Image (cartoon, rainbow, N blue to C red; front, side, top):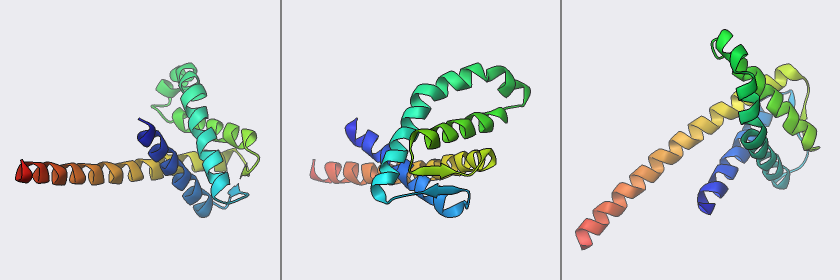
Length: 132
C-alpha cells in the first residue's frame, strides 16, 4: 500500500514537471522538493475536495456532456497553486490546460506502469513454475 502511494506520488510529480515544461502559463519555483510538494497537495486537493466539487457540479457536467469536468479540474489546479506558493498558474485558461496535461501524462504513465508490472508478474510466475 505504501509502495503504491509513493509510486503514485512520483507519477504526479513527473506529470506536474512535464506540464510546467510544456505550458508557458504554468511555472514552478524550485527543484525536486517543490515538485514533490506540489504533487502532494495536488493529490490531496483531488482526493478531498475533488469528489465534492464533482458531485456539486454533476448537473452542469451532465448538461455539457462531461465537458464541465475540465472546468472543475482547472479550478482544483488553481486551488493547488493558491495553496503552494511554488506553483504559479497565469490564468484560468492555463489552469484548465494544465489539468488536462497532468491528467493525460498521468494516464499514460499509469498505463506504462501496468504493462511493466504485468510483464514482471509473468516473468515471476514462469520462474516459480520452473523452480517449483
